[in-house]
Image 1 (cartoon, rainbow, N blue to C red):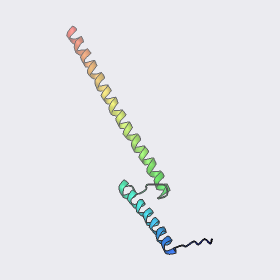
Image 2 (image 1 turned 90 degrees about the vertical axis):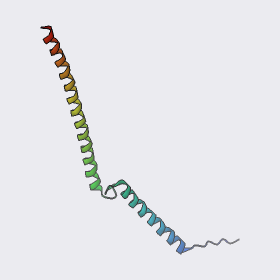
Image 3 (image 1 turned 60 degrees about the vertical axis):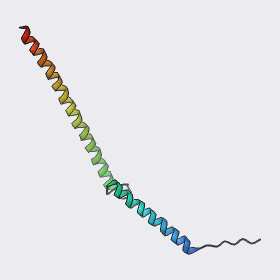
Image 4 (image 1 turned 120 degrees about the vertical axis):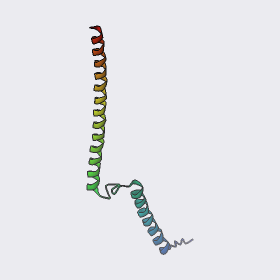
Length: 93
């Protein structure tokens, strides 16, 4: 019993080209949907490192601003309490 293997080179080439096109399409859709120029290190390694560092700095600044606003609110609350105590002392006089 002889075994015969048939190959269709044109079909294999078309399949490889379709896979390549699908990969390119997936990359393009990922870039469009994220709105970022650099999505991964393979796009631009140095650009990704810079963007990641800048993003971390921006998040740190956001936290610092929130902390400063919380401190201002705390001081305003303390000032209000001291004003109330001062008013009570004025009435007691």
